[in-house]
Length: 291
Image (cartoon, rainbow, N blue to C red; front, side, top):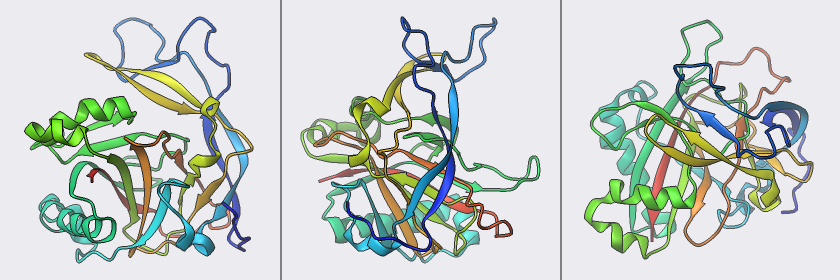
């Protein structure tokens, strides 16, 4: 993607998996629980990469594509007020239907299943914020599930194999039909207040991500093991963010696609040019799209 220069282009610090930081004869892993003994929680390290170039996508936002860069910007003004985004019933009854209409009208999607949702409210005071920004290149996130009666938090990641296992849980008896069609898992991210300058979200053009940048990691739960991805840094990666993002704008980026390989690494970063902005508040969802 040929990108224009913008006065809002910047640099940021992002945490990545340190190359070759795990034993040669072991697969990288991370435990999602505290073991009873002193077994290590992980066998690899992270590194803070400073001055990662992060370009402003606003000058080129109309040229972006889910199939090329892996992310797009959409105008999406919800009927919900700020306070209503914190009401689960409003999210289910209004916001979810707005999203379904958007995808069907704009992309011709036949069905949409909302799997996960998290609201982040940054606060530097201990115990006051929740869903704090994740300053780490990743393709997963800490989430709250909206597809079940009870809402609970967990960390998850989406490989295409995991999505195939997940589909029967999401769609029930329609699983066989959906697995035979094209489907995608995408992230939808938008600020609740704006313009957003405090800890914006950066996404990486996945056409610039080499297969060697993505590290397969065993995510070990008490009763299961899921395979996820860690991200190593490469100077060839192209990172972007949307300057002064408004609540009426939505960043959409791909987590997996039944017809194409690749997921979009993403990370929050602190834009040091702005020190006294309103703390970031945002909503992020993961949805299954079926054509």
